Image (tube, rainbow, N blue to C red):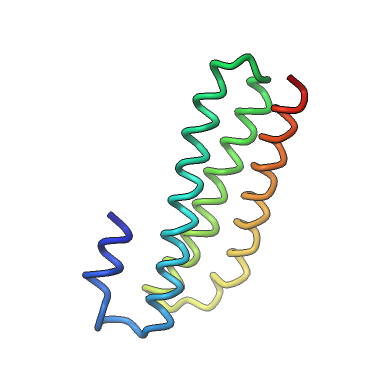
Length: 106
């Protein structure tokens, strides 16, 4: 829905750069929504539930911080959200590391 909103609802309303920032948020949100589904499926494969839960939390927090801050930057033009984006990126990285550790510990 967010992608369609950006493609159809925002075109002509925000600058091309803001639309690009918004689309980056949509892309990363989608990738990590798939990652959350993979984590859920791996929960039935005997991997550490503690590590999988931590990974899922990091992915969810990353979506909120990374994509959410990009949405805010694109739609509301709040420069203070800029420093929040890398924190979301760190959460994404932590989620992937935790997922890898869960897989390697099996």
